[in-house]
Image (cartoon, rainbow, N blue to C red; front, side):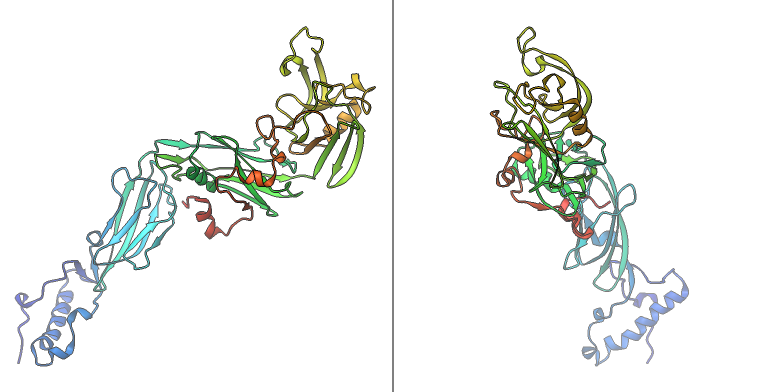
Length: 442
């Protein structure tokens, strides 16, 4: 018995199929398709059809219109704070490549069931993206499609200025890290996002934490001073990250890096009028000094060297002493090492050499001979420690008048962190770093 194989007897193609693999409309392809139909017809018509199984079980490779199979979340003015997603109805997503305008790929992951894909790295506001999507249907067909979208612009962009920013390669062991925000952040949950986007690494690693000085300023310090020789890096990796739920996104990435110098500590004893200079735990020099007299007592506590000036003009008006007062002064001072913004220095005071080591006669600064002040100036750097003990003055302010960060106990310091816990400055593996710091992977 012979069966006809004219066009009217051919089965209809799968609605998802566009063409058979290799089909270009050639007579060879048409003949191959008829051959398959002829081979199947006896099985469907004969008495053994029930034993042969369904024809759907035969997965025949073919090309599909993937654009009809998959759907994406991207539309006009896509929200950069939400992931880009791809879902397949009646099939699976096999691969997605999402790229920004510079061609770099955005990290993403397939759903466990294979029916979807989502980006895992933040998208940037006001940025055009292109996705190449590969999908497969349930009959073994495969195809590709593309999707393009542009994210909407941020309502507010949060930029961050990082410090230290004096352009030096080396700082002392007491130098804190700073982050100044362009916008105030008060919500605890949003502050956590900011802290997570501030990356601190060092070699060797230390335990440290951020402290919110106010709504726009954060300081980071280790539990103890930085180790001598440590390599420290601070970065803002929040570019494109949603900072709040009201349209604020992180601005451009930035960073600073420096090396930690020797552990230099100068201890000024206001009772004995002696300054003990230590380097890496060893006493290098002891020299006579004078500190603040009654009414102008030098602040107690730990201070950090803020800067050094070869010469500076000191005027009493800057500390609230009116011109014409018996306490007024206008002095040219040399070899001045600054420790507070309000004007406290360690400097040369040749006019008080007779009192140095004997009495406290200054207006709050630590004075010494010109020779000693020059030596001190040349042997210290920004970030070194100057600690005053046994003075009748008040305690150094933790913030606002320099770096008094080290006067807070570690427990009190942790209370100022939105995360509420210490962090390690050990550099995380590259694969985990993106998730840990919310760093865009473009």
